[in-house]
Amino acid sequence: MTADQLFDFRIRTEISKVRGAYLDMCADLEFLLVDITCMCLLKHESERNYIKEILVSNSMLSNKIKFAKKALGLYNKEYLERHLDCFTAFNELKEWRNKFSHSRIEGDNEKKDLDVLLFISYKDGELDEDKQSLRACYTKLPKYSAAIYKLTIDLIPMLYTERYYSRYSNMLQFPSNRVKAHWHNSQLGINQ
Image 1 (cartoon, rainbow, N blue to C red):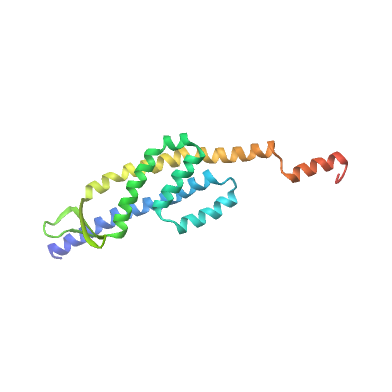
Image 2: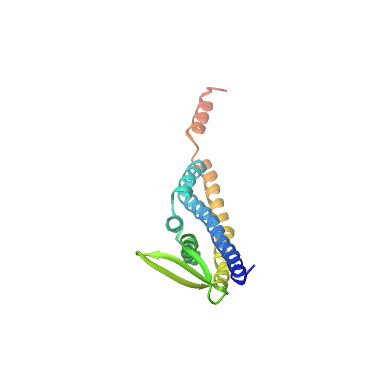
């Protein structure tokens, strides 16, 4: 194997690893954002599952971030303020995800530097070349992972607890028509 071939193999391996890490992280994020949106806006599980299916397959990551942020703000402004830093991180992550998804990525073939990535894409009809450090790409991952973890551990359990608790307490406070009818019929001596 020549030096050029060895460099090409090594840089392709590194590009695959870092690209995979970003895309994998964003896939998890998309499901998390859809879950937040549905938990905040919809009370019933069957409705949530139907809307989740639509949002997961028919909306872009940028819209999922906007939807989740808006839904959380409508549900509880304090929760949104407490997790605003996560949404900032998600918008940064979205930019990196788009870079990894929509660019051709190459190494520096002249210098044979494994730390230099060249993202080649088109913006406004013009060829755009953006040099980035591979090390810098890896060092950003823990920040984004921490933001996803924060919502997964802190916010999601609260939303589920509140939704299910309020659902069952509402059933006790405001019984369904069937329960009311059963009580009414039992008072009249019907169906006993």
